[in-house]
Image 1 (cartoon, rainbow, N blue to C red):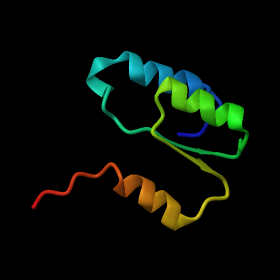
Image 2 (image 1 turned 90 degrees about the vertical axis):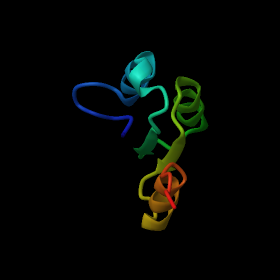
Image 3 (image 1 turned 135 degrees about the horizontal axis):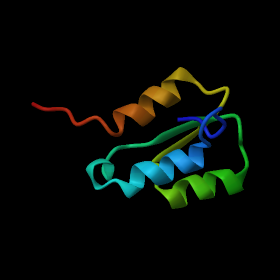
Length: 73
Protein backbone atom coordinates (compact mmCIF):
# COMPACT_ATOMS: atom_id res chain seq x y z
CA UNK A 1 0.00 0.00 0.00
CA UNK A 2 0.91 3.65 -0.20
CA UNK A 3 0.57 6.04 2.71
CA UNK A 4 -1.00 8.76 0.55
CA UNK A 5 -4.26 7.57 -1.02
CA UNK A 6 -7.43 9.45 -1.97
CA UNK A 7 -10.06 7.61 0.11
CA UNK A 8 -8.14 6.27 3.09
CA UNK A 9 -4.70 7.10 4.47
CA UNK A 10 -2.28 4.19 4.48
CA UNK A 11 -1.97 4.29 8.28
CA UNK A 12 -5.73 3.81 8.55
CA UNK A 13 -5.62 0.91 6.09
CA UNK A 14 -2.85 -0.83 8.03
CA UNK A 15 -4.79 -0.43 11.28
CA UNK A 16 -8.00 -1.80 9.73
CA UNK A 17 -6.18 -4.81 8.27
CA UNK A 18 -4.53 -5.59 11.60
CA UNK A 19 -7.87 -5.29 13.47
CA UNK A 20 -9.21 -8.25 11.48
CA UNK A 21 -7.94 -11.57 12.85
CA UNK A 22 -8.40 -13.19 9.43
CA UNK A 23 -5.61 -10.95 8.12
CA UNK A 24 -3.29 -10.86 11.12
CA UNK A 25 -0.57 -12.71 9.19
CA UNK A 26 -1.05 -10.85 5.91
CA UNK A 27 2.24 -9.19 4.96
CA UNK A 28 1.96 -5.43 4.41
CA UNK A 29 4.53 -3.69 2.24
CA UNK A 30 4.54 0.12 2.18
CA UNK A 31 5.52 1.83 -1.10
CA UNK A 32 5.59 5.56 -0.47
CA UNK A 33 7.21 8.85 -1.31
CA UNK A 34 7.26 9.74 2.38
CA UNK A 35 10.80 8.97 3.44
CA UNK A 36 10.76 10.31 6.99
CA UNK A 37 11.73 8.16 9.95
CA UNK A 38 8.50 9.15 11.70
CA UNK A 39 6.39 7.61 8.88
CA UNK A 40 8.53 4.48 8.86
CA UNK A 41 8.23 4.06 12.64
CA UNK A 42 4.47 4.64 12.64
CA UNK A 43 4.02 2.13 9.81
CA UNK A 44 6.00 -0.47 11.71
CA UNK A 45 4.16 0.22 14.98
CA UNK A 46 0.83 -0.30 13.19
CA UNK A 47 2.00 -3.63 11.79
CA UNK A 48 3.59 -3.02 8.39
CA UNK A 49 6.23 -5.58 7.52
CA UNK A 50 8.31 -3.70 4.96
CA UNK A 51 8.82 -0.05 3.99
CA UNK A 52 10.11 1.06 0.57
CA UNK A 53 10.55 4.67 -0.50
CA UNK A 54 9.64 5.81 -4.03
CA UNK A 55 11.32 5.75 -6.39
CA UNK A 56 12.28 2.21 -5.45
CA UNK A 57 14.30 -0.45 -7.23
CA UNK A 58 12.33 -3.34 -8.66
CA UNK A 59 14.83 -5.73 -7.08
CA UNK A 60 14.08 -4.26 -3.62
CA UNK A 61 10.34 -4.80 -4.11
CA UNK A 62 10.87 -8.35 -5.35
CA UNK A 63 13.13 -9.05 -2.35
CA UNK A 64 10.46 -7.76 0.04
CA UNK A 65 7.80 -9.90 -1.62
CA UNK A 66 10.01 -12.99 -1.66
CA UNK A 67 10.61 -12.62 2.07
CA UNK A 68 6.90 -13.40 2.60
CA UNK A 69 6.37 -16.08 -0.03
CA UNK A 70 6.37 -19.61 1.32
CA UNK A 71 7.87 -21.98 -1.17
CA UNK A 72 6.61 -25.54 -1.10
CA UNK A 73 8.98 -28.34 -2.02
